[in-house]
Amino acid sequence: MEASLTHYEVLGINPSATIEQIKQAYHSAVLKHHPDKAAGLGPPSDPSTDGQGQAASTDTFQLVQSAWEVLRDADRRAAYDSLLCLRELQTPMTYQDELDMGDMDAEDCDGGARLFTYPCRCGDVYALYEAELAGRSSMVVPCRSCSNHVLVRASVT
Image (tube, rainbow, N blue to C red; front, side):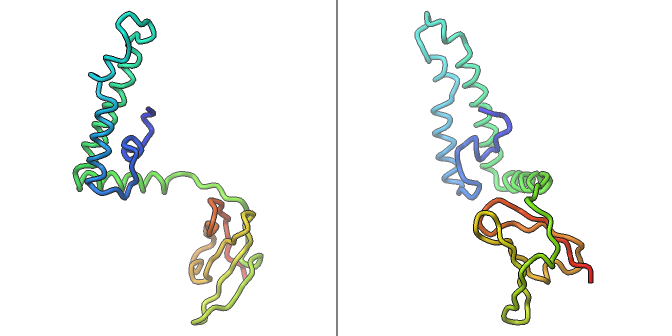
């Protein structure tokens, strides 16, 4: 198991899991990866069980234990979730294209708002309300359906 996995991935659960779901996933993972279980992976004379299986299981078990220690405590879990969110925000973002507001299609909406759209290669659109870009020189806008993003620059008037 990779050390770069999140605690949620180690336990095979969704980040929105309840404490009962976390507890159930923890117990299942303990039963599966406990080092005492790994010690009996094969007959003693089997050269393919030269301790590697037990070592891997011990490493995985330690990851499971670490995940449980953090996720079972509401305060530690909240701090961990904040750390995950911060990591995600710090991840460099790539975008498909750079656009000026003038490259986008504009439509007036109810209440006087203006919606700007631009077609994505997936068939949906990038959508941005004019007010969202107010006071900024540019903004990264996600597609409404896929993982693509574009950089939209405010039009210079």
